[in-house]
Amino acid sequence: MIQIFPDYETLSREAAARIISLGMSAIVERDRFDLVLSGGDTPRRCYEILAERLREEPEFWRDTHVFWGDERCVRPDDPASNYGRAKETLLDVVKAPAKNVHRIRAESADLEAAAAAYAESFPVFPDLLLLGMGADGHTASLFAGSSALDEREKRFVVVEASVDPKTRITMAPPAIFAARTTLMLVSGPEKAEALQRVFGDGDVRETPAALVCEATWFVTNDAMG
Ligand code: 6PG
Image (cartoon, rainbow, N blue to C red; front, top):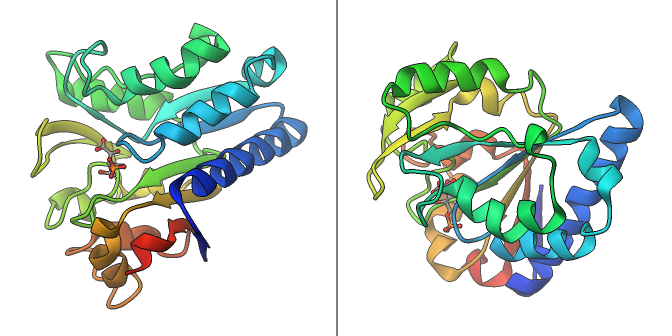
């Protein structure tokens, strides 16, 4: 389902509202909210709004566990770290308990072991998976033509991306398809072509974001082309 918003600020506000309402329902129903964050620039404003709205909600954060769908193989304090960005804009502000923040150890010397360990710690059925889409149609760190798109067992794998930083650990299809809800955030005219491919021929090999074409897509008007 695609929901179109007039601008980035509105999309970010609506995404934050959706995350809060799904989180509250998960906590009521299962005493726990497993939230998987995406990297990239698009969710930045949404994270800021979540930080404003959930700054004084320690009970929400007591029951919320935060994961990532992919990580660039850099140190956690590197500006390119997906964990680092979320920490700065959201997790530090709301004082998320350290034991509830499950980052991918992508700075490890043994990346295969780090991916396997992360898969072990990752929820079987995450409540909410947030994703973004690159202008080339990648999502998480699943890029066009990647053999990771054919993975049917491992939930996290090490991949080489076509953009920097190249080496990454990413969720593979088994982890993506396990999410109870997936919310894709897309903003900006540079995404229009890939978006048309997702909802056109939907060729996952060429446009990996088509893997989640049945998810909820929040899209700004300018990305509709
Ligand atoms: C990453 C991502 C990636 C991102 C898209 C969109 O680590 O790069 O998780 O899949 O979500 O590339 O990025 P923007 O939001 O910056 O366009």
